[in-house]
Image (cartoon, rainbow, N blue to C red):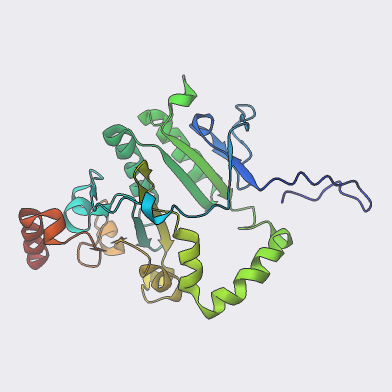
Amino acid sequence: MSATDGLTRGIQVIDTGAALSVPVGEVTLGRIFNMLVEPVDDLGPVDTRTSSPIHRSAPAFIQLDTKLSIFETGIKVVDLLAPYRHGGKIGLFEGAGVGKTVLIMELINNIAKAHGGVSVFAGVSERTREGNDLYMEMKDSGVINADNITQSKVALVYGQMNEPPEPGPRYLPYWVEFLPLWVINPPLVLKSLQERITSTQEGSITSIQAVYVPADDLTDPAPATTFAHLDATTVLSRGLAAKGIYPAVDPLDSTSTMLQRQIVGDEHYDTAQRVKQTL
């Protein structure tokens, strides 16, 4: 899956018989990886003795936690009008330069300090400058502990803009299998990728996915396909950002399946509805 430089015909290949795996645990905290999960932060190699295969079955139904609970982000407009669900799938929809990276940074900071949780930031086609700025901000805020790296609360995975989104023809068998399915039924492919994002009795994984909206058009096929799989949507408005209002969350376009009277309570629900009526 990496570069093919130096490979020649007739070279010996050893089949390990092992599945494609990535390191897990505290050894990944505070570290920066590329898309092949290789450390790129000049802090030395990562202990790979504890690893997990990337292809695994979703949790069994009896392991799931069916209790609906609100995931408090500390961002008032989100918690009031479009609250997130523990173990849910959330989408941040916006065009270029409206502030989704800043909002994600705030969420990572609040998760670490208010909940003691751990985050994994996956930057797809990130600019080197933006990735470096994000890393330095996390160090300044204490989310990344430079003195004791294993006490950090985030792991960073970057796919830089000078790298392809996938390792070219080396993923050809994958695309041969999934591309026809994507053309026929895009939601089914998304579902197969996201079914492992859930809450169990041991913990929860809450996915916050930044979705680029071409020309700020929410009816574009890319964002439109994603909507059906999300528990909450946070739409960022270019008009609010132009006025200097951050986070530029559009309170009327943002939605959540958790904003129900039986889940959030009468006071929360009535307050949210009155705010929307006023706006």
